[in-house]
Amino acid sequence: MTTPSDAPASQVYSWEPSNSWIAARYGCDPASILRFDLNTSTTTPGWVADALRATFDPPLHEYPDSLYAELAEAAAAYTGAGRYEILVGAGMDEVLDIIAKTFIRPGGRAIVPIPTYSMYGVLTGQRSATIDAIPRRPAAEGFALDVDAICARLEGADLVWLCSPNNPTGAAEDPAAIVRILDAAAALGSAGPVVVVDEAYHEFIRSSFVPQRERYPHLIVTRTLSKAFALPGMRVGYAVAVRPTIERMERNRPPGSVTTVSAALAARALREPAYALATAAAIPAERAWLGEALGAAGWPVYPSVTNFILARVGSPERTEAATLALLRAGIVSRTFGPAHPLRGHLRFTVRTRPDNERLVAVARAFMEEQGA
Image 1 (tube, rainbow, N blue to C red):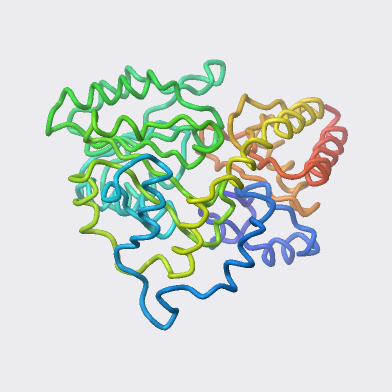
Image 2: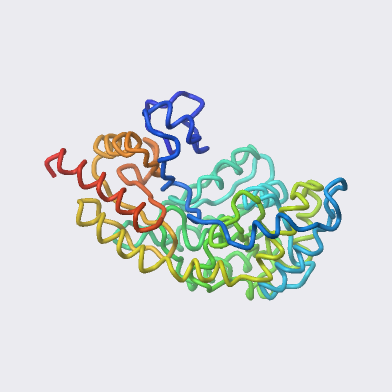
C-alpha cells in the first residue's frame, strides 16, 4: 500500500496512486512530485527515442509475433538459456500470473515467506488457494528466510514464492538457503512444489539461479526490464526454466499481450545491456549516502543490495504522520498496512542526489518537529 489510511477506498489496495490524485489530495504541484515508491530508474535510456522513430518489422498494423522470437532469443542469449527455455509476458506481473495459473490448483497452497513482494499473495488468493505465510527471521538476522520452517511445509504445497534480492527488505537471499529449499522440494519427486526465484533486481547483484535450472526442473527464475533496464512503461518480463516447465506455462500465456514496440525495444535492451549494468553499478554509492543521511535524520536503514532501501521510522502512528508529511511535500514513499510485518517502516527508491537531498530535508524537519 502506498497511501495512508485516510485515502479513499479505491486507493487503499496495493496499486499506486497517480501523481494527479496525490497532487489534488495533498495540494502539491504534480510536476514536483517525486516517486520514491516504485523502485524504477530516474531516467530513460538515451537510445529509446531513436528506436521509437525506427521502422519495426512486422509493422504496427499487424499483430505481434505470437512467439516473440526476437525477444525470446535476446533473453536466451542474455541469460545463457535456450531459446525455448524462455517465456515472455507483459511485465513481470503477467509472468507471475501465468505461473500461478499453471501450477497453483484452485484450493491448493502456496508458500510465501513474509515480508516479500505483495503480488505473490494476491495471485495465490486469485486461485482460491491458501497463502501459507511463513515469517522471515527477525530484522537482526537480516530478514533471512526461515529455511527449516519452509522445508517443513513443502509437502503438499503447489508452489514456493521466493524473491532474491527480496522486495521490500532489499537483501539478497543466501544462495545456500535457496539450494536447501530446492533440494528438499526435489526430494519429494513429482509431488514436490514448483519453486519460483524472482530475480527482478538481478542486475544489482549479477548472481543468478538460471544455471541451476537443469539440476532442478521444478525451478522457475523470473526477470523484468522494469528495474535496471529502466523500461517499466514497456511492460516486459520473462521466465527461464527447462523446456517441459515452459511448455506447461505456454498453455496459459495470452496471445499478443506484449506489443510489437515493447518486444522490439526489450530485445534491443537485452542485446545491449550496458545501460542497465551501468545504472546498477552507479547505485551503491548513492544508496550508501542516502542510507547514512536518513539514519542521521533519525530513520535508520537496513542493508540493501538493490536500488531501494528500507527505513525504520518508529511507531505506526509516527510512520503514518511521516507519510503524510512526505506527501504534502510531494514525496511518495512505499508504506505498509496495519497488518503488515513492516508496519513502522518506509521504503524509498534511490534517486538522484538532488531528489534524495529533498527527501532527507523533509525527514529531518519531520523528526525535529517530533522532538526526536
